[in-house]
Length: 416
Image (cartoon, rainbow, N blue to C red; front, side, top):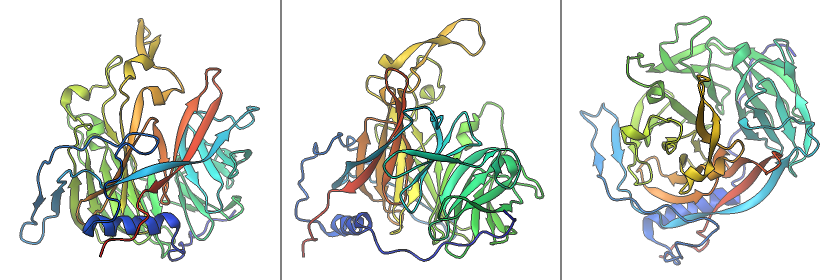
């Protein structure tokens, strides 16, 4: 498996039913649709409570500073509904399925899973949820991994894998077999592959050949740096590391979203390094009060903004983890980290009892909230095509990953 440049991905494919429905949803949000009065309680889960208006648009300063769009916090006119797709299973234990660090859906419908405790293993499941095989093994060889942190679509039906432990990207062909590798000049965690073959890497964890004082690095197809931008903030005493934590999404066309982990803020950038705007929301369910930031055992889990996605229409999909209404019932005694006694922690494999997830679709140009859904599950993954996945274990400790399709309710044409 020789080292060589990673190819780009082709132009946008034929639009999916989800993309067409979202386009219709966006048009309806602008002009109104027949059926706007749909029952807010419809669907398998309740929609989020509409938050209180908190502001408007802050104009750019001298045409240079990025806009700050504070959502008017209008309630979404449309809901997202869930349709079950499949469940990934490990009935005989061959896969070693456990709490996932990475989940990705391949173009042909297979699912790639990296367990938290086996970050060198890439498990492959078919579209029906059956375990097929592992890709690669532990090590530094051309068909081996040392620490996978992200998987993203690449050219055609291929996928690219960030092997942070070995400091490189690995490409799997359409058959999901190792094809080639490309060494990276910076050490990164999240990344995206662009239509023309360039790669955007989010770093801040150190560097091999370069001083990583910037968070984002744009690389050409041969993995040589083109430019870097977004300053890595200095570590300050008393400021939690989570304050600086970001989650990145990049569209094939090059629109970049950086989600702040501990507040509902998403920075929008372009590939030239321009900060276009920051989208902020202050919904009642994302209470960012300092006393909720400790994460101490026995306290409610604080709200967190997780990795977003940007779909083919340029719409931003966000995922927030919030406390389940009955989160206290999910706690069980466990040894504390100091080994000096017991504390309370969530039951392993029962994250849905401890946290819910709220998925929102936002127009990044205007900040308008288009659709939203609260799920009684902790979403571990969301795809560009609206697939979401969550992990659970049954009472016997058997692991499962449930996969669902999010579908907008807008189905009628816009009113004239």
